[in-house]
Amino acid sequence: MKLTWTDAEDIGIELYDANPTTDPLTVRFTDLHKLVTALPDFADDPLASNEAKLEAIQMAWYEEYKDNQ
Image (tube, rainbow, N blue to C red; front, side, top):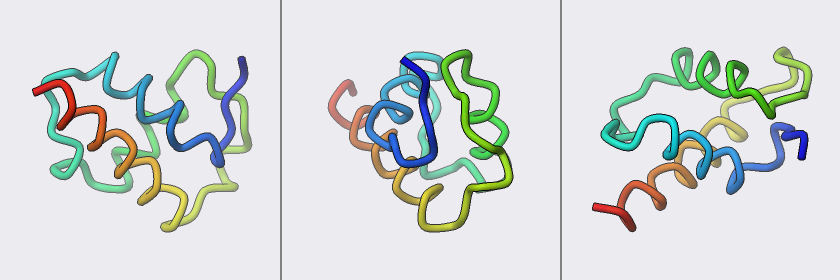
C-alpha cells in the first residue's frame, strides 16, 4: 500500500514501528517531514505537506507510542 500525506494513522503506525523508543512530541516538524518521506511505502509529493498534515501524523504516531508504553 502506498502512503500519502492524508494517511496519518497508517504513517503514525509505520513511524512507531521504525522508531519505537522515540517520543513523537519531541520530534520537530522538519525532522518529522524527513522521517515520513523516508518511509519505504511513502509515495506522495514531498512538497504537498503542511503543518496540519504533519500535526495529524505526529498525533497518530503519539497515540501508537502511548498505547505501547
